[in-house]
Image 1 (cartoon, rainbow, N blue to C red):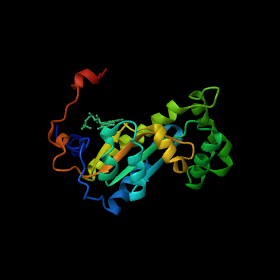
Image 2 (image 1 turned 60 degrees about the horizontal axis):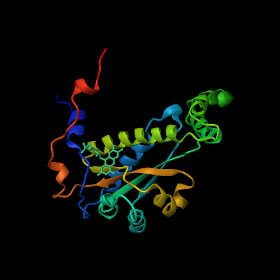
Image 3 (image 1 turned 90 degrees about the vertical axis):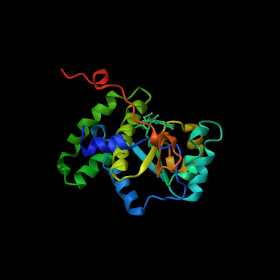
Image 4 (image 1 turned 135 degrees about the vertical axis):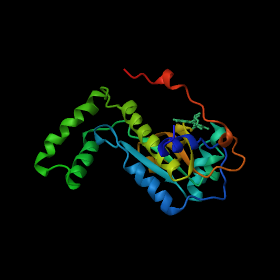
Length: 217
Ligand SMILES: Cc1cc2nc3c(=O)[nH]c(=O)nc-3n(C[C@H](O)[C@H](O)[C@H](O)COP(=O)(O)O)c2cc1C
């Protein structure tokens, strides 16, 4: 099949080795971060925080989070141009949703007099919340939508990336406590340019066949 979207998805790959000398230009990063901000989420909840690691100081801190686990991803902390920590709110509540409601009014999507009605959608969040107020599986699911969206954007821009669930959530929680402010990071995205000896770049794409995963009825 020939289509620009399919070409993007076939040409991208998970980077295993970055060219440490190449930085993603500011203007390109701006597009990536705007695509991230525009990601859709259930009831437009946006129960996330994206922490962009750019400075040497932050890269060192991220590097240090691999002290105990997942060392195979550690090299990306300093060789990737940037890394985004994807963090979710484990207890998304009505007050969090009020920010979304008020922004929708400010953006002209709804009238101020309808403010109370807009909270009707919050019932969907409540359906996914346990008696302790925890809705982490639901908020975490939203993060992956944002990640998929931005991974395609990155491919379109000719930039490379590595999605990483191989990150130590406890160490990240400790070393980035100030930035996370109660949110939890269990997945990150390194961004940069693949190095000449990134073995994964040369491997053919491999996916299950259409008939194994797609049923058209
Ligand atoms: C949510 C998620 C987590 C992943 N975690 C890691 C990881 O920690 N380290 C790694 O090298 N690759 C990781 N991968 C990459 C996958 O192994 C890769 O996407 C898959 O094998 C398909 O290969 P491709 O991305 O090159 O097309 C992850 C991918 C996803 C989507």
